[in-house]
Image 1: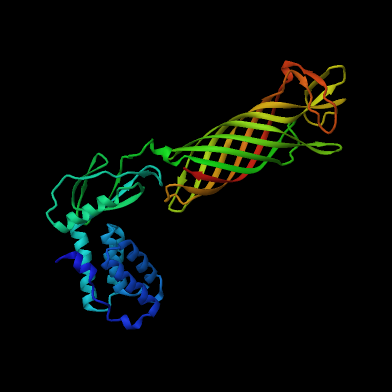
Image 2: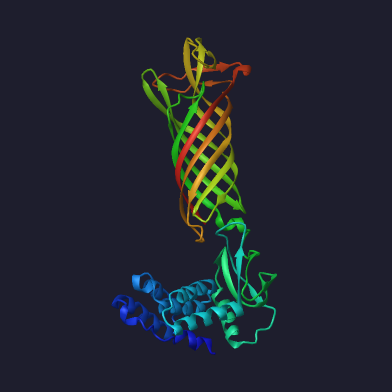
Length: 399
């Protein structure tokens, strides 16, 4: 049997007159493309055909699609289409053809699922045949496969190969006829595996601080720029934020647009078959929080302490405190990770403990029109703490 001719010149279905003209036009166009060896175009037309009500149940269309996918070395997909051709067969000839094709695939080929620790990793494939293939048709298939794999592939990737022994990216793999197996392939790329999916994200949201003497818990607009470095299932990241802190005054609300922080995070990514990833992380940052409230005694130089609770100092002043911010965040990210790169969206919620100190001396912030005043704080009274809640919505781009 010369399989190529067997695949390309399948007899039309006896039920052809029962289908719609639109459906037949897809099939006829596909046959034309197949005669020109334009198998990619033929596959596109046949997939349109099986998307119709008639094509979905037509064994001829499924068998032609199996043939085209074989020519494109998409073995797993070819087997799936041939199985649908068998299920929908209406004549003995259609049943025989589908069974023979399925038997040929099972007796001559195996499928190796190439995997990596992280979905979406890309690699070049260097495949060397170590055993001998005597069948010229199988040799032709292997040569087509090698030509097709000249570009990067995105893992996981199902690879259909004639039964035999191969070296794939420097590692020996045994492929048994009719088998399906998985193999953690070595990555051939310009950089480490994780570097292929560096993610840059920009997000905006709110920050609320709770606890004296931090600024009153009015949600503060916050903007964040981050870079995430996946390494297997682990994620290392760096972030920088800018915050516009609102400060509640008797005369109203004023803002101090000088809040900032910078730091890193370490997390793990969980991802199922869906394109939604859940990424919990531990975070550590350092930054400035304007609007720390001080209770002061008047004088040429104010004598102050961070204001705690409902105390009623003679004078209130504000300064910028610096703090270590230790906490955790959960980021829910959506992106089609079957692609090598692309945009994604995410929702991030984080809780931080802020452990800071105010300066020993300086000029108070000019808040609400009040004039700046010099102040000093005893070294033992400079500590302050607060709890922060952040909620952000953002977009990311995987390089």
